[in-house]
Image (cartoon, rainbow, N blue to C red; front, side):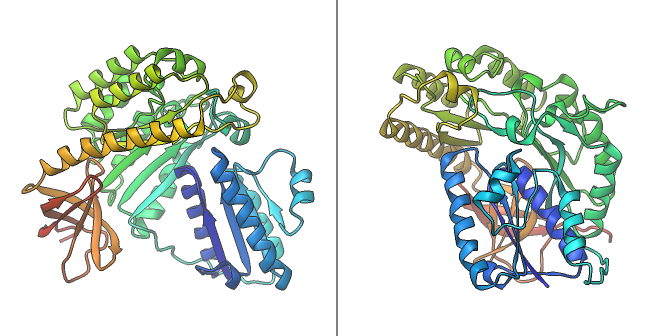
Length: 426
């Protein structure tokens, strides 16, 4: 039996696709890279923006063509494309065998076992990637006016810490060395549990698992970044000094319309608190340009905020209306598409300039990276602060911690020479 998984969207989708893949592999199924070769095809979808939803519907059309020629093929769809109205989805896409909502991995597993009951399940050790995602909280309670996620993934639901720790230990046994905790807002992890457990506490418990070299987490809502969490990042040796802290806009009126529940002054105070405790922390962010009503001056305020804060990464997107959100009901999408693109490219160029300067300062320095794999004949990995590094060397360095002397730099990556291999379990 063969399976195919197609994933777009956030890190939560990537984490859930990993769980799906691990389950199907434990059934002794083989993963393939082409949908036409699969007995089961799984689509893990995103509709946070219109172009993402267009890709989903395009992929569903492509699979319909394959299914027409091979009707024995089973198709399952999950992710934020799946609404509560499953009957409407089934009418629109009759070639899909199963729709299951984000996080309902158990429902998918039951379906597979029923469909393929004749397949003897042979549980075997899962070989994990070096860097793996673990979802720790589903859903979101914030209801930012532009975001569809709370309507598709529901309210916040935290996983039990024991369940997360058990999964992490199994992944480490399979070869994982870096754990990335994910959720729509990881900062509120544990608040809904009967025995409350904060993200800071969870990081402390994960930090003690032998074999975990690095721990990261995302995404963090600025209003929920606690002092305890900042202290945990500073104190725990294998928690990376890197945080994704979405700003979304630098203008207070736009932030209010977005229902972000902080001001630009609040955000800057938080950045100061973090950097005063963790001087070398790398901060990345998300930005939306062209939100309804955004003026040129309001955009320039966002631009100046990026200049001031000097993020290590800026993920920028042009606003697009998502039906069902508060913004779609309350605001007219009145910023011209061309203006949105100009603003988007302006921020991309600013970020390129910032990174060119900061990365070129690293030439000649030794950086420590965890090797994640190979691309185009070069080994690659990321630094403690999430900078991408490539090097060329003979031998097998997969999963190893190595030092690389930086020789050249661009805005997006560092290139260097191997100088040292760290010794584990010697």
